[in-house]
Image 1: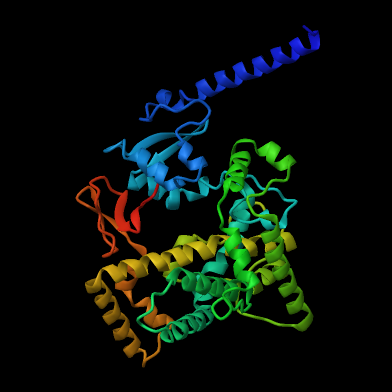
Image 2 (image 1 turned 180 degrees about the horizontal axis):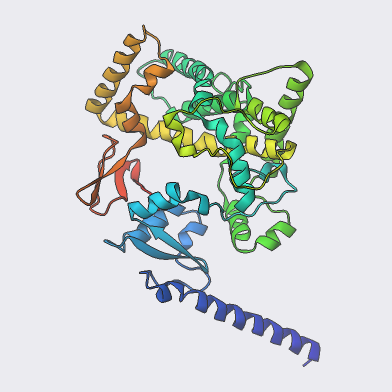
Length: 421
């Protein structure tokens, strides 16, 4: 046999043997830590093949896995060869998500600074994340969000006007209407543009948005490469965002910025605040509201400075659309569905709305909306501690079928579950 071929085969076999050894060692991690776990498959961990064939979602697999560990508060999980900790203890969840959140800054996907649309708070790590979060925090204060209530109300009025014209005997695909509404809200509040998705549902803005959230095998493969072969993914300039979609929205953002600069246009939206942040280096925080406590704004944060340039501005503006539209539309759709199935709760919500609208002289104002606590409970859902066990406080809609809180189940289209994992 050719010596070169023999050497090549020997190298390949050595690499396979080494990779197998490393994977076996990685799979011993939770055993050494004394954390309960399910024996993983070599290289694939605890993931199900159904995920890769798009037969099951990420959450379906996670909750199926959790069902095997009734009574456990901490469960080990193998994300391929990477150990992940699934937490069901509410005190630990609070520490990770709120109290000690500053220590849990990094996400999995690496950032490639060659692509403006990949540069955002969602992809940054460590000191860069802390610095950018501090700069962006004033954008999300109650005062800033309150100032955007009017454009949201205008989008809501457009939606209700369209729905009022539909014959009550007709079936209505609310998903299409709510998706268009969500795009209009994000377009107005984030970019200051009228994307006309409600009035022109077949426009390019909506088509590109739908393409953004389309999951296929190519996206799954990209996620695997970005997660487990980050250096190779960076070398190949792989991004989780679709290039044509990202280029389309980034062009809209750039054109809007250029138009405002040339014509001296100022709007009360996130893009305008991004422009202010870029020009001045910070956004003035005039007053603190009790509702802003979750932002944890510090007077003098001990973080390194970060330049907020054009790419950072465009990347974060694009991330607003990417991360905002689907959660908004899903939240509205799920709430509407459950209200339609529970007339008694629906009537109570309606009575509360009518009460505070009447107090506001027939207007649905921001202050009137803030008083609607029962409506808020239906939308959000809250858990509280009751004699050592967690009970579902909020949502009158979400009926718990589980004796293992805080994983709470409720029926919606199929067996949906929510909780912190």
